[in-house]
Length: 78
Image 1 (spheres, rainbow, N blue to C red):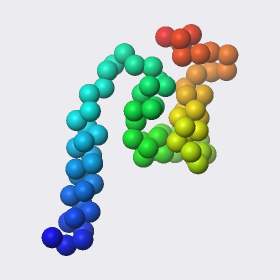
Image 2: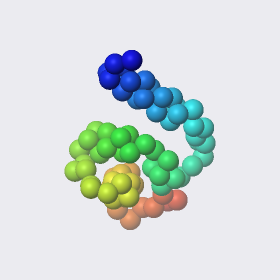
Image 3: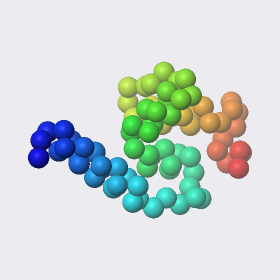
Image 4: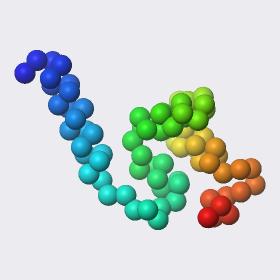
């Protein structure tokens, strides 16, 4: 197996592991962000035009803040 095949197989295994996780539809955005793969958080920051924070928990906070208008909490928006 050459190096490219090895890398492809590894990435595919990791993708399958993530996709096999069950996700409840009744979770809070905070819980959803914590369970989301880091690369998805990065992609969400790029998609929404947010400057990517260095730490994962800071990126989670950025996305949570982006999702709710000032003065609103997660509970106030449901």
